[in-house]
Length: 125
Image (cartoon, rainbow, N blue to C red; front, side, top):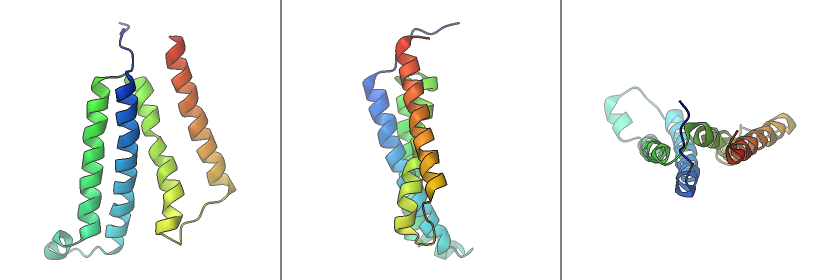
């Protein structure tokens, strides 16, 4: 059964915002995990971990709401932009992480893939 649903611009804006929240959440989760001690009291006071969970949760809620207003086949590939944000931001927050030519090529492929899916959704194919 073919759906006549068109992806609304607000769904795309919301999914883009969601990628910013979730990738920021992933950065904070990593920062918190570096400080992680398996002690309940220390977990509850691990501010980067708590902030990461909150940002990730907000991003997940935005993803869910965006799905109401758009096609999964269009929106979910855009959600893949998380890979780009995390790859670019990680070296800034974690000096042991670095970008190299292969990672930059991967980013180009992700952007190209998301763009092609977006163009495919406009043509109605």
